[in-house]
Length: 249
Length: 144
Image (cartoon, rainbow over all chains, first blue to last red; front, top):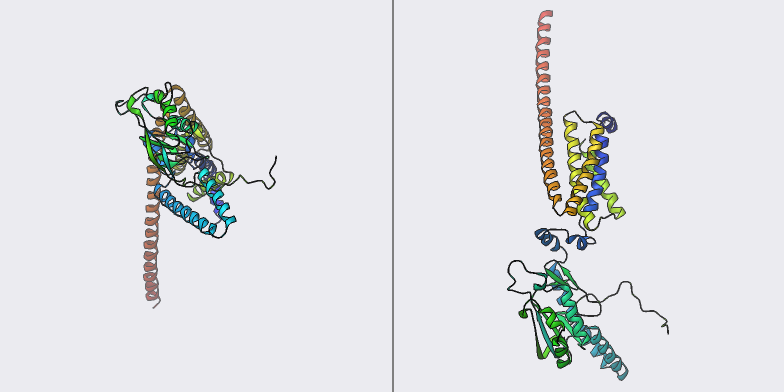
């Protein structure tokens, strides 16, 4: 058996090349796209590369399948709770409270009268749309905020229910609502007092006039008598937050 | 011999993984370009080793200046509004392919030399055997 180190010393290139290979390996890992830094690096990439990188963010098929499963399990849970409630008066009262809390948290499907706001990018903007020709994440945020401010009890965007932990943010050509990609046209459904919602949205100088500055076709609002808003299907378990044992006054 | 730098590459990658070292945002983009420059220099080092003209100082300075210049050009391009990192990626990409193809030729040549040397050695050994046999025979005849 030949001592390999003798050979290394004889060939003088091996040690420096190996040393710098180590640095190179370190650099490659440092420059690698990971789930942590993917979002803050997307902005520096060109269109097609961004598309390829973004496809890895959420495996859409798996996500949708899991969503269906969550939906099914939540329904089952509600049925179970109701079954338990049939047992006694006390547990029935408890269950009522529980159902109220779930409505508040957005974990149940809701229906009722409300408004339907449709936002779409200006289709007549030509090949080079201006900033005002597009619906941005900020526009969606402000629309939903306006609806909540006007007393909306439940709001959804393209079928994604907004809850207290929901986020709306920009992701290239699409908008992410709690990590689900949605694109123009955006249909915002809100359940609440129809006339209040409608008038607060359409009042002079309100959201309606502001958004439709480029083209009146970008925003439309209509009163709907029966709106169904789906339950929130995202993650509901908390990792860091805990309920304190002793409540402070 | 070529396996040692590859092993070191893995070790470096592992160290970065263990330390959870990740560049963020625009710095990471410049870093990625610098990686290309580093890869080119390392391949260039292996190539010059095959050409028997490897020099320590040339190699070491080459690595650091190339990576730093690649980083600076990419950064400069963003400061003056031109995608200069594309240029860096193009140039170093071409050089990487160039170096790799030359290394491949040398490695292939080494392999062919090795095979032919083995063959020649075997033939020589056989020829020697035969001649010694005939020599032994003739010697025996002489004794008789």
